[in-house]
Image (tube, rainbow over all chains, first blue to last red):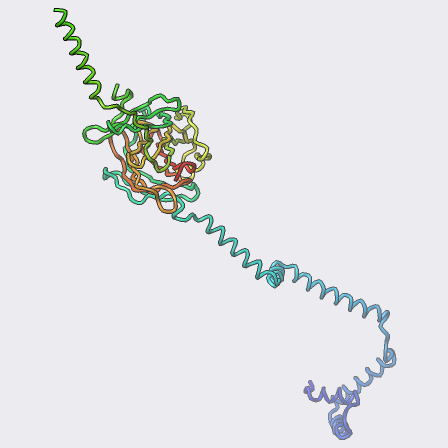
Length: 216
Length: 170
C-alpha cells in the first residue's frame, strides 16, 4: 500500500496542479516505482473513460424548482421550530413574563392577596377572648382558642363527669329578667310575661332555683 | 252619762285627726331600670351524631346567629345540633346576671365594664347545678360568640353558646 503522501501526490499529478519542479520529481519517482506507475496509468485511463462517457457539466432537472422547494422547506422548518418553541408552556410563561404591564399587575395582585389575607385574619381586638380560666375541680382542664372558620371563641372543658344518659336535660326559653335586689334574687320570665324561675343564693352562695316567687 | 259619751267621742276624733296630720305624705318612687352593658343571648345545645338521640326541641337561633349549626360543626365534630333552651339577658352593670337556658347548665356574668374597641369585659362562671365548673375573665364582643364545650351526654355533648347581641351592644 502506498503511503498517503504518494496518494496525495498522485492525485495532484492527475489533476495537473503540480509545479514544474514537483511534476518532474514525481515523474522521476514514477519511473523508478513500477507499481506506482501502474496505478497512475489505471487512474489516468479511468478518468479518460469518465470524461468520454459523461459530459463535463450536467444541468439539474428543474433546478429552479428544486432550489425554491429547498428554500421553502427550510423556511417552513424554521417557522415550525420557532412556532413550536413559542407555544411550549415554558415559552408562553417566559413570553408572558416579559409583558411590560406585568410588574404593575403583579404588584396589584400581591397587594390584593395581602389585603385578603389581612382581612381574613381577624384582629385580636375584633373577637371575643378568654383572658384567664380557673377550674376548681383539678380533674377538669379548660383550654381556649379562637376558631377562624367558625368565627367564634371556644372554651373547651375536658375531664368533666358525663351527664348520665337517663337524666333528662331540658331547657327553658327566658325572654327577660327582673332583679329584686332587696331579696338578692332574679326573676326570669318567658315571652308571655309568665314567671318561670327565681334565682337566689343559699347560705354558702350557691344558686338555688324556686319555681314560685319567694315573696308568695 | 250622755255628756261623758260626747266627750269621749270628741276625744277620739281629735286623736284620730292628730295622728293623720302627723303622717308625712308619701310619693310613689319612679321605677328605675338597672343600668346595663348590653344584652347577651345564651343557649344550651345538644350536639350528637345520632339523630335518634335528639329531644325534639323546636327552639331556633336568633336572626343575628343564623347558620349557628354550621359554625358549631367547624369546632365540634357532630352532625346534629339542637337548641334545648335559650335565654336573652341584660348584662347588668351593678348586679350579677344569670343566663339560664337550662337548670342543668347555666352561667353567671358579672360586668367589669366596657372593653376597649367594643364589647364588654366580664367575669364568667359556668355552673352545673350546684357546682361551678370554670371561672373565666373574658372579653365578649359582638359578632363573636363564645362556644363552651361542656359535659358529654348520650354519646354527644352539651355546648353552651354565649353571644353579645350586636344590636344591643354598647
